[in-house]
Amino acid sequence: MLLNFDAFTLVSYPHYEFTLMRDIRQRKITGKVGRQEIEKLNHAKNGCFHILQEADRIELELLAKLIDDINNKDLLIKLETALETFLEHRERHWLIDTLIVT
Image (cartoon, rainbow, N blue to C red; front, side, top):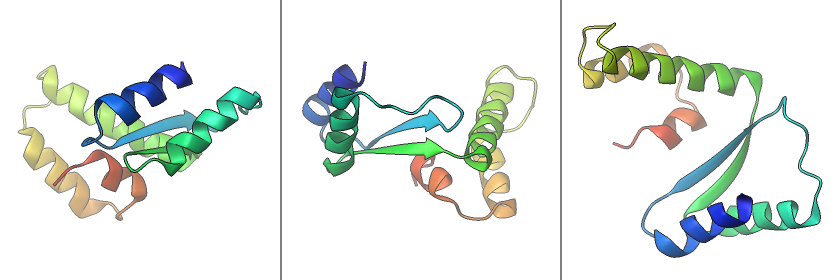
């Protein structure tokens, strides 16, 4: 799958930025090809690989839940307003900078 991801990101869409995230709880990637593909991704202009620490994962899940609740109309607020409020009350973090395009 990592080979397909690299081919997709690096060749097809060079004007987009891609971040591949892996939960730290998952087993380490030990295969030679997998490690090589991660290196290629990390050295690409438009790609990077991050291991999600517990706090990162919780932050990502919180944002995903917020967006999901808004889309399902369980939370009646504009997405822009929710994200602005979220950002006002959270420290700036690499994950937020990666996910939110201004």
